Image (cartoon, rainbow, N blue to C red; front, side, top):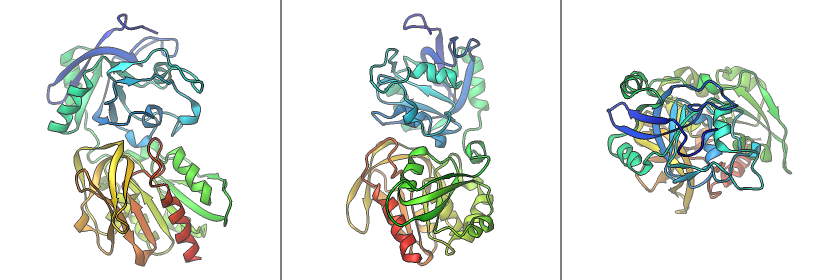
Length: 374
């Protein structure tokens, strides 16, 4: 693996023509994991403000189609560990860092970040002025990009040809091919939950299995098949892409609302909103980080939350639901309660993988809702 100063020069080129100079890493560099490096990768560039948890972020399926910029300047310092993976492999298109730590130091580390990226074919670039890049994204909005060792003109053409996430059904790229089960791992009443996999994270399953036995089903599973399993509740997971492109999934959720207690997170929240006649829209640069303050409207409590979404729900567009949470940074709707239909949703990530644990009570709220319904 190439060391600092020995790495091939690389460029990050945005669709608006902005150019950032850096050095290749990950799948852009020849290594024992990948003897033939890739020349370029494309995707929609976003930034994440978390100070830790880079492995969980990189393996979060919700980043499918996107290139992740880490605002924290040092990435890779504690290596990678199998216990921290949120999916079997990364689905992001690339990783951008200010400085890659090439010699990790942590007793849990099973290897370094760069060999992990190489093994999974994820392109990366280091030495980028991520502060400048983040300011540019904040001012101009998330956009398509290309990174690699190819020439600037080729990278610019690739960036402009990249369609981004708008109108894209990326759930089909990350959902499970077949159903699978996870037994209940905690004490208490043995509820059964069917979880729709729109890009579900391992940490979410860990928390769900604390309150129920969970059967995970592919995203396109018909509602009738789910109801035939007679679950105590249905969970709608996080996932990537544009919720407006998922009308085929929304139709199934329409049939579930009111038939069974329901809890949705992130994309699941957006799909429930659309099933109730709501509208979604794309944020300028999204919410990606582990430090977003959210107000619980009923209690007045402020929760510090983990977030990863590029789309949001128009608050006034949802019929028969009341807002339950709001983002204190920009006023974005962060949660819905649909009491008459025994359903609730949040836009953020209460499983905190990575992030603070302020909102983990929502999994207990789901168990309480299933208990009231039975």
